[in-house]
Length: 96
Image (cartoon, rainbow, N blue to C red; front, side, top):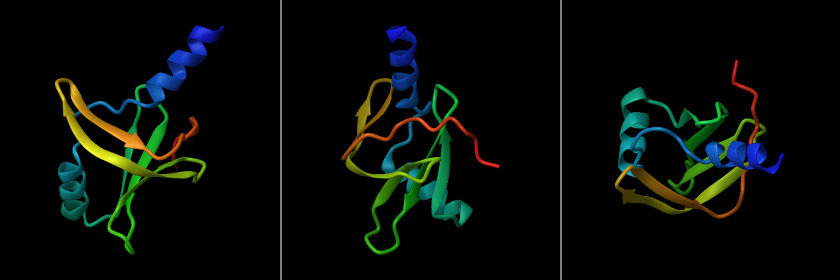
């Protein structure tokens, strides 16, 4: 029973594509938005929004829990790696 739970949690931390910080900010500017929703490999949604006061990108789940990005956009051969200042648990409900 442990393996399926671990797989669900790990797949929640992966968003397909190469989303470095510059690309996220370009997409936000192009769409004239301050929030972008990303579907993770397990089907849950993570949102990244631009905090107006600080200009920082902040991660949130669908329950509204937030987490600051600590290390942003380390290029990897298969994507981009981010570190957050804490843990966001999966919220599997999709936005309306």
